[in-house]
Structures are given as C-alpha cells and as structure tokens.
Image 1 (tube, one colour):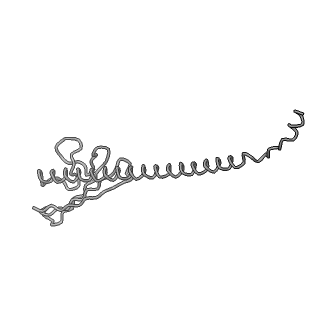
Image 2 (image 1 turned 90 degrees about the horizontal axis):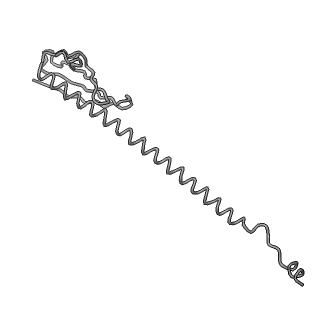
Length: 142
C-alpha cells in the first residue's frame, strides 16, 4: 500500500525554477548596467575636476607673472623688455619665463609708444603638464 501511494503522486515538472532563474539574471544584468553607467559618470567628473584644476593653475601662473612683471617694470623702467624676470638672482633680468608653483608663465612686453610710456604686458600661464593655458593682457602707461 505504501509503495502504491508513492507511485500515484503527481510528478513535478523540470521547469519549476526557470522563472526564478530568469528574474535573477534580469536583475543581475540591470544592476551591471547601472554600475557601468555610474562608473562612467564618475570618470567624467574626475576629468572635469582635473581640467578645472589645470585651468586654475594656468590662470594663477599668468596672474602671478603679470604682477611680477608690473612690479619689475615699475621699479626699474629701463629693464630689458625681453628679459623681465631675474631667475638667477644677480639683479638683472635674464628671462621672460618664470616657474610659478608647478606651473609656468611667459611674459611678452611690447612698447606701444616707442618711448616706453605705454607698455602692453601679455602674461601666458601654463599648467604643470601644459594642457591648459590662460592669457592675461594689461597696458601700462606713465
């Protein structure tokens, strides 16, 4: 009698876990896509932040170079217009390029009047890896 009752039990279908498996795989695929998109957004934010930092560094270098050039020209109007910066500390200008922090600045001074009463100073700042540049122009008159 016991054997007979086991034989009369309905058999279970082999497809019982297919729905659970397909739902699990769908959730896995969707979560993977979300993770990839979040990673892509984070990388883009990092690139934007790095570019902003480099641009700020280039601007600060240009601003510092411009200030230094103006002070040098105010102190000694006869200084050479092609070598404004004293990089070797001997008291005379020997370069138009100066290192500012990790950046660099190049100064170009143009005599607009011919008698040094009107000078245009162009300061071009560069980031540490030269990927960002900023230019500031100012005219001095006496």
